[in-house]
Amino acid sequence: MATLQMVYNDTEVYNLWCWESQQIVHQTAKMTNRTLSPTGHIRVALLGPLGEEPMLTVITKMARPSEMRALEKESRIYTTRLKHLQGTVVPICYGLYRGKMGSEEVGFLLLEYCQGPQNVPLMDRNDLIMIAVCKLHQAGVLHGSLDDLHHIVCSDIGVRIIDFSGALENHRCVGGVPMGTHPSAVIPSRNGCSELVLMEKIYGLMDLLSSHNRF
Image 1 (cartoon, rainbow, N blue to C red):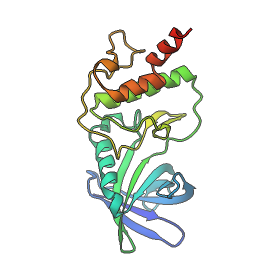
Image 2 (spheres, rainbow, N blue to C red):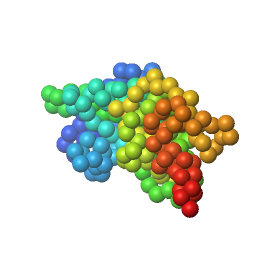
Image 3 (cartoon, rainbow, N blue to C red):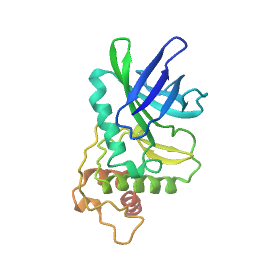
């Protein structure tokens, strides 16, 4: 079990627990004033060992009782099917912590901070996105909302795909290789994977070919 002392503001401090953790870790998270969602449920915090000044910048996603199941699902996907992709394709997951704010049950999912500029040429960025999406599919996860650009974050640490609360698990397709990266890649439209077709049209080789054929 891991514990988290959540310093929510100057007057509110909450003790939270992560029962799924296999390590006994005691940490402090100090919430900042930076909010990344209109509702204020996604915020930036500083994380560190209990008793020390927190220094690591992280993202916190808060859920109230009606939203807890979706947050638990996202945490489970990060820590099972996508565990080997943390820090490369998806954010590092620092755990799902639960507790109470007053009388209300709450949960906080702590994730790697992956905001900032990316100085990469457009074609290289698109290749990185396609490779990341295909790795999700190879892991058996269909995101379901990648046409919304808010779920693909490009920064100085690379590409990260985020928010798996609506994802489908146990996904199977044979087109999980970007067309522009491998000579034997399977064209996604032939296997019926709508998400890969969409991503190829937006970021991949299919869009380049169709653009070329128009001239």
